[in-house]
Image (cartoon, helix red, strand yellow):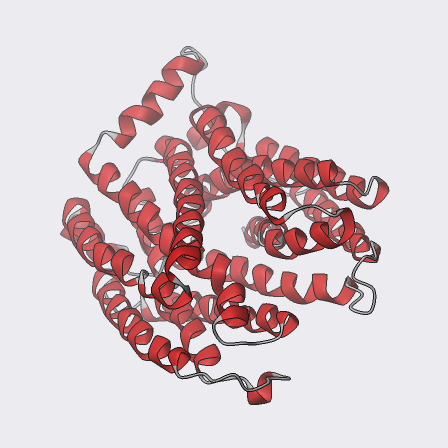
Length: 416
């Protein structure tokens, strides 16, 4: 079982780096290929929309494909796409990479979320591993910042030497492929008779979302990812334009958000063994709102003084990203609560709905934050995060009541 868990963690780690490299790659394709900002921004859509579409198409069918086969296909796909990047340096290969990454992540996330139900014994263990998995994802995000920066030539922005990083990523994906290939996973509990067709399976998934509990859940997941992605995508721009940090430092200091989120999910895995997930999330949301109200006035007081490094960066650059520590437990906790309340054969379709609405929420959050940032300024854009925080207080309360007191009590082992 340890081998299976290690394989799932490594699979998630690979995609964490690739998915969250989009900001870095947008900057690099402008330097290397002379692509305009508006054209470069489509890379986000290539990633997120592919995730949503592929999840919609395969989630209901994934039990027939097999979780292990789906994950192997995903790893092989991104490994080939990574090898292509330095061999054919062009903007179209970059689009292809993110489309492949989106498609692969849809298969990986649906399969991993469904597999957790096969390798955990109770709701406590399910929620605990879910939180640990998501904290490992954020470690991947954090690693990606430093991995890509190690291959970037600051002295020559037009250099394509940074593309060498994709050989490293292809090697990691290859290692993950071999580990999974040689790891047995017993999927017999979820094997279904092939008597119904694709349309019937798709209907099963769509009927799931009509259940009141699932409907409230997908709204909650959508709003959470909208808030998280809005902050994560625009934090480097906030650091640069509002806090007047140099570009390289703006990107580096955005890693504080990834680090604090990883730490928050790890600590949640420990805390939720003793505390109800509902009350922990309520407390975290209130503190998150307080941090917004504390950090943004600090940002408003930043003058035009030159900043050269971490040592003379304004306090707001450290305070605001700490919001990750408190919003971190929300996504794993609600995912674990809904999955562990459903029978095993519905984990695949439910994981598909999670991936679809998360992708849509991420794209929506990035677009809304970008629009508010451009129209009303960075301060207003980040004050806007108070709206989803308020909505989450309501939605999580309704969701916890729908799930029921029994599940709320037993899912408290932990729990994006």
